[in-house]
Image 1 (cartoon, rainbow, N blue to C red):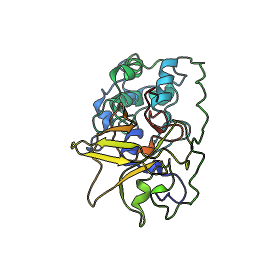
Image 2: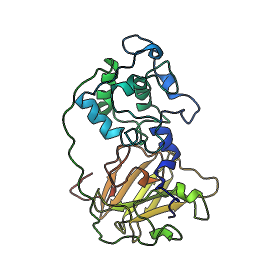
Image 3: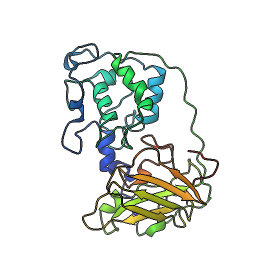
Image 4: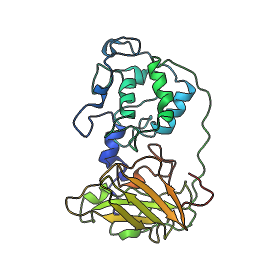
Length: 295
């Protein structure tokens, strides 16, 4: 899996760009137009005075879980704006100034083809805290709770890929997003690719778990079954003219135990979300299922 010249290729996924960024949807419509043209208090968003301020704790926790991995101080994966305080949400939408960023965000939470976060439409009870906050006029709050630090990165296998970024073959760069990198040059085009690990927090280039089955059922009902190699990597080559048919379901199977993703999959570049720390709602790495459960 060949890596790009300067950065890991998490920013190149089309679905992730559409989901993290507040841009036009894949069907050509502006997702922000789904929202009403006024703020919850009846003031036209384009004329509203932008007032900043901290966020209520429950809203802050929602954003930390689902949004700020892309829309944080350091924008990632094509996100065009930060969403960190009340002022960010009170501003007019960058694609439709008649609605606020808050209202545009609510619209994206339930959009069929370009949901936000891009892993799929969240369950109603999960997004309810954010939707209620927007409906109430997105008031300021104060959250002093410090989130717990993430678990320490540990390479369970204690073995790493050391072969560089060119000509690596199927064992190269475990943990890294691969698909868009294979669009440029002589590398084979990939439809699905990723890495399975023993634990949720493993570093890039660390070899993962071999012999694990990954099963993806796409929107057409076609089932792709792959087995991880010695590096923990799995992949399926893309045929000419073929595209990933999402939304799809994904499951990981090992020793007769299955773990199924709770939300639909809109891209085959699995490691773009299943990073060391996790993006767009992913808790971290794709993990070998066990009878004890886990992330």
